[in-house]
Image (tube, rainbow, N blue to C red; front, side):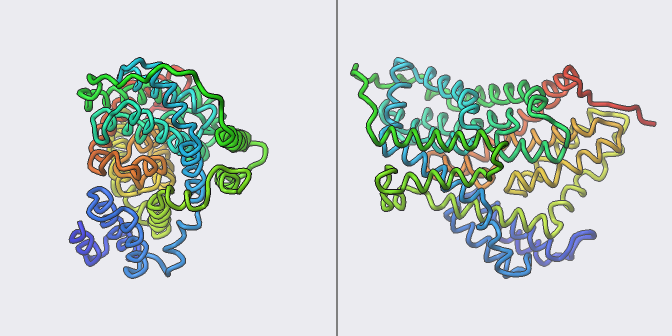
Amino acid sequence: MAGLSVVLMFLPTPAGLSVAGQRVLAVAVMAIGLWCTDAIPAAVTGILLVIALVLSGGVPGFPEALVGFAEPVAYFLIGVLTIGLAVLRSGLAERVARFFLRRCQGSSRALYLQMLLSFPLLTFLLPSATTRTGILVFVYEQALDLGHVPRGAPLAKAIMLALNSINRLASTVLLTGGITPVLAASLIGGISWGRWLMLMCVPYAVLLALGAVLIYLLYRKGFDLPLTPLPAAEPKSLSGKEIRTLVITIGASLLWLTDAWHHWNPALPAILAWACLLTPGIGVLAWKEFEKGFGWANFFVLASSLSLARALGSSGASAWIAEIIVRGMPAFSQQPALVVIALLLAAAPVRLLIPNITGFLATTIPIAMSIGAATGLNPVICGLAVMIAGDAVLYYPAQSASSLVVYERGHLTAAEIFFFGLWMTLVAYLVVMFVALPWWTAVGEPLRLISCG
């Protein structure tokens, strides 16, 4: 992959692509290859990415290469992971894990089903998938330890892959569920909270269900082994640490849920929670516990991937990729289904090359809507189709903060995440064509608005 990156760097610059864009693409190929193969630690890849952007001339200077480290989402991740660490250290994770284990009565399948059902339910309390994952990963690590499931066992991989890849899907059902729905709705325009829920509830419910079934089939051997039952015991009262952790977590959640009133960036409540959890007398963590337990690799990978996404956009590389891929689509104007298929097929390589969902959506949705308008299709449907194609998949951990939370715990390899991402690409295509399009037509958003020719 490094060799391919060097070759791309020194090839003649293609028409329509700037020299800076060509060099950013070469750096992106290098970073994606290293992230997908685990050849070196992911955080080191992130640092090399920043250096390569400067030395190659992909960005004007060092400040532009570090722009991702100033993005609020990187600090949102710090706050969310600290909440998860506090849930673990306070004893809340073990308490919740014991509750789940007793309810599943030794059944691995019941534990898995309980977790899946918790995703949509917790979405209303914790809309951010990163927040839910940051808490649940510790809860289910405790549950697996208490059930004597060894690290690396098929059941452990199934649980963690569900947290990594399909927990995110529950968030997109809500317009307030994170950056994906907020940005997509903004780019498409004119979609209210209720309308978004109506459009997304069925396609994403099917996506989540099919993803869960796929994980079950891939790791089905793990579900045949019973969990070690817990001895009967009277539940203990909440400790002071547990109560303080609950109060701080709920306070942050309330601030996230009421952002329509105060308009705070989601990073601000997360950092407030972080400060409270580390303040003596209020919080539950000492600074040394935070330093030791916080996965700093997450921060470096996310921040550097944001820098790469910004460089792809500012250099014109991402727009050039998308235009090259979809240039021939107007020829399909008499076949609406072919236009959608072409959009879906084009979305996969763009998603692979753009590590950040923000960069992917900002690149593909406007182009997809323009193609829809040019071919007589509903631009809204074209925009939503490519959003699903990009949102449903993860090819490497750097593409999602919630994925980084799981990956840093060491349960999954980059290859396993990539392999499942390929399967989910196919699932997303099928859901768009056979579930979403009929559903959207039924609720008043047909694919074809006018006849062409």
